[in-house]
Each structure stands twice: as structure tokens, then as C-alpha cells.
Length: 281
Image (cartoon, rainbow, N blue to C red; front, side):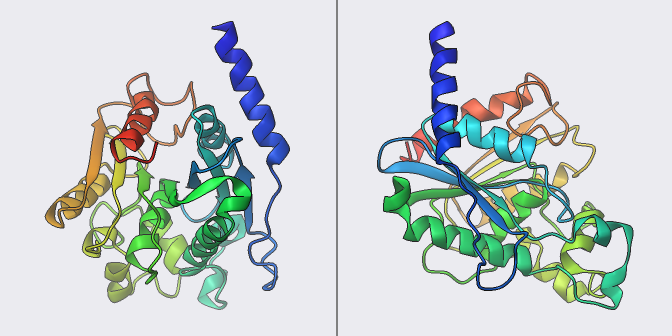
């Protein structure tokens, strides 16, 4: 046990030393967008771009960002934590976007596209394998992760997608209304055509990469039916995917060793095993 703790400390220390935030929109005055690398040593490593959740209004940078990156590092996987554009607290407490554009779709998706491009184009520099870069997102970040392969026409796709207790539909009865308001903006949130166009279950592409999907039946924030809709849509399209639905765990547990339940925290081991199954590790 002491030896394991020692190596965990060493790996996390190395990754912290290598961290340096990347301004991914340096030519566009988007100083609030940050991509922070957590790199493991060696070459040709697998990597994951992490999209923390937060209803498209804010980010859970600790539980669904930093802690996820450290856990991946412990398993020999490099990580990039993306702080994408959101409507932020001012957008939550006011309705200024009735009058002004503010941050809304497709801004977060543009940030993720840029992050993936940077990781792929600098793969050798970061010691990662270009064809082994995936995207993981939590809650609204899970919607963003899937949006990358559904709403962006790009020949270079991520190797896999891992939406964890994701927001999925923007038009169904189980819609997470706070995320919908943040993503669409007040002026557009009642636009049925736009709602349908951003509902993940309606737009699974034929070339969708493998998907790892997790949620809990007792989720009090994002109704569990969101993940069931996505699972069904992936099944219809015959997309390779693994869906795990836990009975307990709630929402927002990320990679924490204390949040959620013993049952829900099993997703981390299941994810690493799945990466081996799809030949990423």
C-alpha cells in the first residue's frame, strides 16, 4: 500500500510540473477559455480531454476536472482539462441575453473543437498518440462531449467518447432545463427546431466512435432517462458502446473517492477495463 501511495504521489507531481495552461483562443480575446494539460511521462500515451459539468453556466473544475485528470494519470493516461465558455453566474442570475448575445451555442463546442485540434496537432510534443485521444464529459460536459461527434463536421474524430451522467435531450420531458437555457440563450430557448437540433438522441452519426456511458437511477439533477435515450439511439445505430446504469450514486461524483456511493464509484475501474477492450490501452 505504501509503495502504491508513493508512486501515485510521484506521478501526480510529474503531471503538475508539466502543467501549463494553454490559451486556445489567443487570437480572439477569449481569456476565460483554458486548456490545462496533465501529462504522464513516456511516448504514445492515450489521452483524454475532460469537459467538467456545470449546466453550461459554470464548471466543477475540482471533482469533474482536476480529480479526474489525476485519476487518469495514475492509470498512465494523459489528460487535458478544458475550461470552455459558459454563460457564467451573471447569465444565471440575470436574463441579459434577451438583449445581448452573450455566451451560447456553439461557443462551448468551438472551444472543444479547438482543444482537440491542439491535442492532435501537438501529439508528439505531449507524448501522446494522435489516434488515442478521447473526450470525457460530465453532466452538461457530457452533452458537450457527444456534441463534438454529432454537431461538428470533422474528418478527424476523437478515438472515443465518455459521457458520464450526461445531459442528453433538449426537447424531451426529462430535459435539464437549466442546461437548455444556458446553452440556447433566453431568446432562443423556446425555439422547438433548435431544441430538436441539439438533442443528442436525434442525431447519432453513422461514424460515431465507441461510447462509454454511465448514470445512476437516483440522479436528482439530470433525470436518468436522458442516458436511456442516448443508449437506445446508439443501439439503433449499431454504435459500439458500453452503458452502465447504477442504482445509487446521484449526480456530480466525478472521479471522487468520497462522493457518490461505493456502487457508482466502480465506473472508474470499468472505464479503464473498457479502454483495454477497445484497444486504447
